[in-house]
Amino acid sequence: MGIIIVFLTLFSGVALGTQSAINGTFSRKAGTIETTFLTFITGAMLLTIIVLFFGHGNILAIFKVPVWQLSAVFFGILFVLFSVIAVPSIGIIAANITIIVGQLIAGIVIDNFGWFNSLVIPFDIKRFVGLLFMFVALYFIYKGNTKDTKKSYTNTD
Image (tube, rainbow, N blue to C red; front, side, top):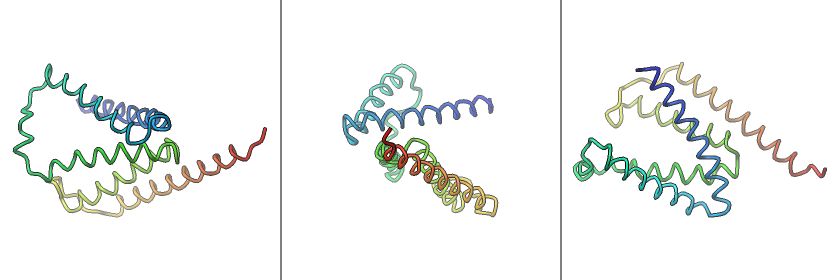
């Protein structure tokens, strides 16, 4: 089962990268907020159908959870909105690496303090080095993008 989860997660990364590219392009014509809205309204409609036919949970439990848990919705909206803004400006790879670095920072802090009922996994040198490598990757990808962008704008062929 573990390998299936790995492949499903890998596929979700592919889907996220593809969505970022399409949303970035779409936002140039429809607008950033409009693209974000369309993403969520379409997702809500599709998920409504999925919940109606395949749901086994209790949708009314949303009224029983602590209010702070509902903040996940706000963070999801920010994620899509900011990625729609970022992709046309810095490119798909730089936007996605930046998102991953942000996720790693949040994950390290959350794990270290055990926030939101997560496992407590102390920040150590291995995590520091991993995060450092991600920042190095981000630097080189971003610099590569800006260099290529300058070339494409200055090329008069």
